[in-house]
Amino acid sequence: MARTGTERFLYPLGRKTTCLEKGEVIGNLANGRVRVKIPKSSDCSGCEHRKFCDPFGSEHMLVEAANELEAKTGQKVEVQMVLERRTKAIFILYILPLIFLVLGAVIGNALDPLGNKDLSSTVFCLGFVILAFAGIRSYAKRAAAKEPASGPRIVRILDSS
Image 1 (cartoon, rainbow, N blue to C red):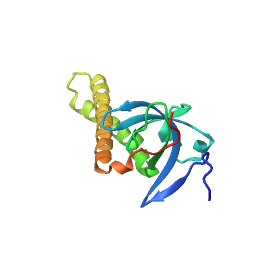
Image 2 (image 1 turned 45 degrees about the vertical axis):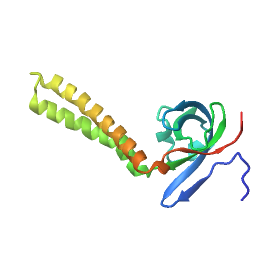
Image 3 (image 1 turned 30 degrees about the vertical axis):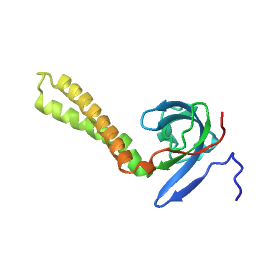
Image 4 (image 1 turned 90 degrees about the vertical axis):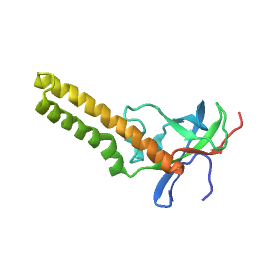
Protein backbone atom coordinates (compact mmCIF):
# COMPACT_ATOMS: atom_id res chain seq x y z
CA MET A 1 0.00 0.00 0.00
CA ALA A 2 1.46 3.37 -1.00
CA ARG A 3 1.68 6.09 1.61
CA THR A 4 -0.05 9.30 0.61
CA GLY A 5 1.25 11.41 3.49
CA THR A 6 -2.22 12.08 4.88
CA GLU A 7 -2.83 8.63 6.35
CA ARG A 8 -2.29 7.48 9.89
CA PHE A 9 -0.93 4.02 10.58
CA LEU A 10 -1.22 1.52 13.39
CA TYR A 11 1.20 -1.35 13.19
CA PRO A 12 2.72 -3.79 15.63
CA LEU A 13 6.27 -3.27 16.87
CA GLY A 14 7.17 -6.52 18.56
CA ARG A 15 4.42 -7.00 21.14
CA LYS A 16 3.60 -3.29 21.28
CA THR A 17 1.24 -1.34 19.05
CA THR A 18 2.45 1.99 17.73
CA CYS A 19 0.90 4.84 15.83
CA LEU A 20 2.39 7.57 13.66
CA GLU A 21 1.12 11.13 14.03
CA LYS A 22 2.09 14.32 12.23
CA GLY A 23 2.73 17.50 14.20
CA GLU A 24 4.82 20.62 14.60
CA VAL A 25 7.77 21.13 16.92
CA ILE A 26 6.86 24.03 19.22
CA GLY A 27 9.75 23.99 21.68
CA ASN A 28 13.05 22.45 22.72
CA LEU A 29 13.44 20.67 26.05
CA ALA A 30 16.44 19.23 27.89
CA ASN A 31 18.15 15.93 27.04
CA GLY A 32 17.50 15.95 23.30
CA ARG A 33 13.72 16.17 23.62
CA VAL A 34 11.18 18.52 22.04
CA ARG A 35 7.54 19.41 22.59
CA VAL A 36 5.35 18.57 19.59
CA LYS A 37 1.83 19.89 18.94
CA ILE A 38 -0.27 17.26 17.16
CA PRO A 39 -3.71 18.24 15.84
CA LYS A 40 -6.52 15.80 16.52
CA SER A 41 -8.28 14.45 13.47
CA SER A 42 -11.38 12.43 12.68
CA ASP A 43 -9.22 9.31 13.14
CA CYS A 44 -9.00 10.15 16.86
CA SER A 45 -12.72 9.51 17.35
CA GLY A 46 -12.22 5.85 16.40
CA CYS A 47 -9.11 5.29 18.50
CA GLU A 48 -9.61 3.36 21.72
CA HIS A 49 -6.89 5.48 23.39
CA ARG A 50 -8.52 8.85 22.58
CA LYS A 51 -9.49 9.60 26.21
CA PHE A 52 -5.89 9.26 27.35
CA CYS A 53 -4.42 11.79 24.92
CA ASP A 54 -6.41 14.62 26.45
CA PRO A 55 -9.30 13.80 28.77
CA PHE A 56 -10.46 17.44 28.62
CA GLY A 57 -11.24 17.52 24.89
CA SER A 58 -8.64 19.89 23.43
CA GLU A 59 -8.26 20.23 19.65
CA HIS A 60 -4.65 19.07 19.82
CA MET A 61 -2.26 16.96 21.86
CA LEU A 62 1.06 18.11 23.27
CA VAL A 63 3.66 15.39 23.52
CA GLU A 64 7.27 15.33 24.60
CA ALA A 65 9.28 13.36 22.04
CA ALA A 66 12.86 12.18 21.63
CA ASN A 67 14.55 14.29 18.99
CA GLU A 68 17.22 12.00 17.53
CA LEU A 69 16.81 13.66 14.10
CA GLU A 70 17.46 17.13 15.58
CA ALA A 71 14.23 18.73 14.35
CA LYS A 72 14.01 22.48 14.89
CA THR A 73 11.17 24.60 16.26
CA GLY A 74 8.54 25.19 13.57
CA GLN A 75 9.34 22.06 11.56
CA LYS A 76 6.61 19.55 10.67
CA VAL A 77 7.51 16.08 11.91
CA GLU A 78 6.17 12.56 12.18
CA VAL A 79 6.06 11.17 15.72
CA GLN A 80 5.89 7.48 16.60
CA MET A 81 4.11 6.61 19.84
CA VAL A 82 3.71 3.27 21.59
CA LEU A 83 0.18 2.69 22.84
CA GLU A 84 -0.23 1.21 26.31
CA ARG A 85 -2.66 -1.60 26.83
CA ARG A 86 -6.03 -0.03 27.59
CA THR A 87 -6.68 -1.96 30.82
CA LYS A 88 -3.28 -1.06 32.25
CA ALA A 89 -3.70 2.62 31.35
CA ILE A 90 -7.20 2.80 32.88
CA PHE A 91 -5.95 1.20 36.08
CA ILE A 92 -2.95 3.51 36.39
CA LEU A 93 -4.78 6.76 35.55
CA TYR A 94 -8.14 6.22 37.23
CA ILE A 95 -8.37 3.22 39.55
CA LEU A 96 -5.06 3.66 41.40
CA PRO A 97 -5.81 7.28 42.46
CA LEU A 98 -9.32 6.19 43.51
CA ILE A 99 -7.86 3.41 45.67
CA PHE A 100 -5.48 5.93 47.28
CA LEU A 101 -8.38 8.35 47.84
CA VAL A 102 -10.41 5.73 49.72
CA LEU A 103 -7.34 4.52 51.60
CA GLY A 104 -6.59 8.08 52.70
CA ALA A 105 -10.15 8.57 53.94
CA VAL A 106 -10.11 5.33 55.93
CA ILE A 107 -6.67 5.94 57.47
CA GLY A 108 -7.44 9.60 58.23
CA ASN A 109 -10.70 8.64 59.91
CA ALA A 110 -9.10 5.82 61.91
CA LEU A 111 -6.05 7.77 63.11
CA ASP A 112 -7.83 11.14 63.56
CA PRO A 113 -4.57 13.09 64.18
CA LEU A 114 -6.31 16.47 63.87
CA GLY A 115 -9.04 15.80 66.45
CA ASN A 116 -11.79 16.02 63.81
CA LYS A 117 -12.54 12.85 61.83
CA ASP A 118 -13.92 14.72 58.80
CA LEU A 119 -10.97 17.09 58.61
CA SER A 120 -8.47 14.27 59.15
CA SER A 121 -10.13 12.19 56.41
CA THR A 122 -10.08 15.15 53.99
CA VAL A 123 -6.42 15.97 54.63
CA PHE A 124 -5.39 12.32 54.31
CA CYS A 125 -7.47 11.95 51.10
CA LEU A 126 -5.71 14.89 49.49
CA GLY A 127 -2.32 13.71 50.69
CA PHE A 128 -2.84 10.17 49.41
CA VAL A 129 -4.12 11.35 46.00
CA ILE A 130 -1.07 13.62 45.65
CA LEU A 131 1.08 10.64 46.64
CA ALA A 132 -0.68 8.47 44.01
CA PHE A 133 -0.05 10.96 41.20
CA ALA A 134 3.56 11.44 42.32
CA GLY A 135 3.95 7.65 42.18
CA ILE A 136 2.39 7.53 38.70
CA ARG A 137 4.78 10.22 37.50
CA SER A 138 7.73 8.36 39.01
CA TYR A 139 6.56 5.10 37.39
CA ALA A 140 6.25 6.82 34.00
CA LYS A 141 9.77 8.28 34.27
CA ARG A 142 11.25 4.93 35.32
CA ALA A 143 9.44 3.13 32.50
CA ALA A 144 10.69 5.70 29.97
CA ALA A 145 14.27 5.41 31.28
CA LYS A 146 14.09 1.60 31.26
CA GLU A 147 12.84 1.43 27.68
CA PRO A 148 13.47 4.77 25.91
CA ALA A 149 12.25 3.46 22.54
CA SER A 150 8.76 3.02 24.00
CA GLY A 151 8.27 6.77 24.43
CA PRO A 152 7.22 9.17 21.69
CA ARG A 153 10.01 9.88 19.23
CA ILE A 154 10.43 11.80 16.01
CA VAL A 155 10.92 9.35 13.15
CA ARG A 156 10.82 11.72 10.19
CA ILE A 157 11.10 15.44 9.43
CA LEU A 158 8.41 16.34 6.87
CA ASP A 159 9.70 19.78 5.91
CA SER A 160 12.85 21.81 6.41
CA SER A 161 11.34 25.16 7.49
